[in-house]
Length: 369
Image (tube, rainbow, N blue to C red; front, side, top):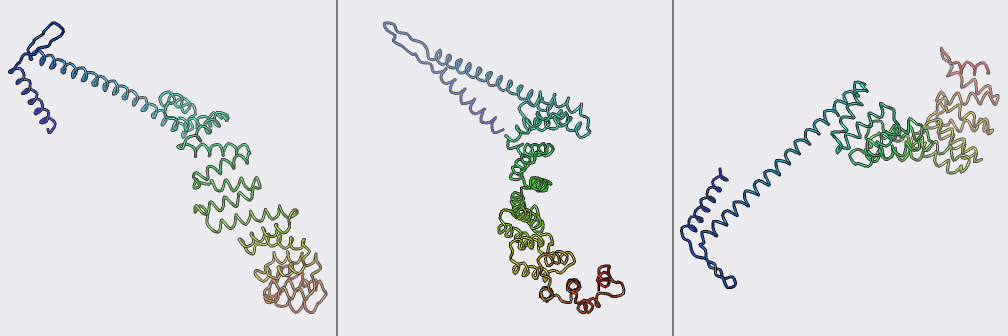
C-alpha cells in the first residue's frame, strides 16, 4: 500500500510539471552559423517526454525479458538437479537391495544430470565400482575424493580398506593415520590401526596412536596402558640382542603400565640374567615374588634359580621371607628342600598343604619325600 501511494504521488507530481510546461510555452532560439532557429518549448518538452518514455520502455522490456530467461534457465537447471537426486536415491536404494543392475543404470542417468555435484557423483561412483569390482577405477575415485574437504575422509577410508584387502599394510597405515587425524572417532578405526601396527611390527606407531586415541577420549586408561605395554614389550624383545640396557628400559616401562604380568616379568628377569648381574637378578626375583606370589611366577622363578645355581635354601628363605605363609611360597620352599634333600624341612612345610583333598602337585611332592 505504501509503495502504491508513493507511486501515485510521483505520478501526480510529474503530471503537474508537464501540465505547467505545456500551458506556459516559450520560444527557444538557436544561432547556428548564419542561421537562426526558433521553436516552441512545447516541441522540446514533447521530444524529451517521448525520449524518456522510450528509454523506460526499452529498459522495462530488457529487464523483463532478462529475468524471464534467467527464470527459465533456473527452472530448467532445478528440474535437472531434481532428476539427478531422484536417480541418486534410486541407485542407493538399489545398492541397499543388492540390485546391482539398477544401481549401475541409475548411476549413469544421475551422471548426466548432476555433472556439477562431484560429492554425490563420487560417492555413488565408489559404490558402483565396488559392485563392478573395478579396483583401478575405484582407486581413482578415492584419490579424487581426498582432494575435496567434503569427501576426503571417505577417500582416505576407501584407500585404507583397499590396501588392507591387498595386504599392503604400509600404505593402509599411512591412509588410516591421515583419516585418524581428520576424524579419530570413526567406528573401529583405532582398532584397525592397532591391528595394522601389530602386523607390520610398527610398535612405536602403536604407542603414538594409543596416546592420541586416549587424548581424544576414544579409549580408556586401562586400554591405553594395555596397548602401550604391548608396544614397549615388543620393542624390548627387538632390542634384546643389540642393546640390552635399552631393552631393559623398555621392559620396565611395560611392567610399570601392566604390573604383575608374568610374560613381562619373565623377559625382565631373562634380560637381567644375560647381563650377568646375579645380585640384581635375585633382588628382582624377590621383589616380584613379594608383590604377587602365584604358580606361574613360581615356575618362572624356579627355572632361573636352577639355571643360575641360585638354589640354596638360604636364598629361597630370603625370597619368601615376607610371604612365608602363602601356599605358593610353601611350594617353592618344598621344591628346593627336596632338591637339597632336606627331608625334614620338606615334611614340615607340606603338612599344611595336604588337607582332605590334596592337589596333584602336592601328591607328587609327597611321593618325592
